[in-house]
Image (cartoon, rainbow, N blue to C red; front, side, top):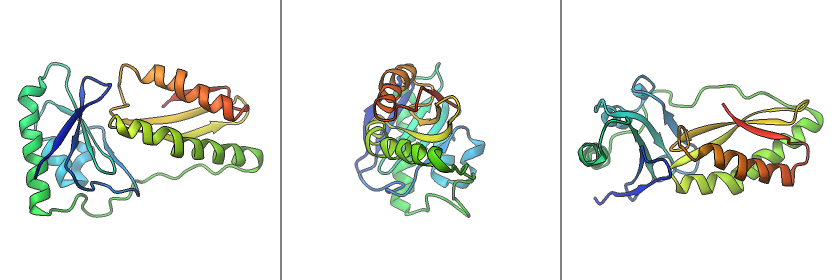
Length: 188
């Protein structure tokens, strides 16, 4: 098994490509700390190093964020080993009920139409681009009275130095262009 690695715009995050499906097209999994990784044997194995601060599973990649004072030269071999061992053993990615919990707010009337447009633009134009960088951005909420869209940033996007610029100059400008009711975009 050959695992490729790619750098991301976030210098603390590295993208690992095992050459096979990780989560598939259906979903993603974000583990912001070791406690959240309890439901995934692979995430637990990666968090075995105290220098790992976040793990994110995308469709065909795994993003790992390290602590600021650690060095990829020392951390990368143990992560590669954990990924290789997991996939060669054929272990499950998740244990138990691994569905991401959380009820989504329902919108009605004009707000429902606007939210559908926002989600469609995020799904077709934003998420594929940020997945290439080892991250994910998902819709969180829309405030119809102020026009503010809240987005949840995951993977390498969470804590990335350039995420604010991406959010304001990229995503906000695009949403405002296509959906005049949107006035601003913010991260949650």
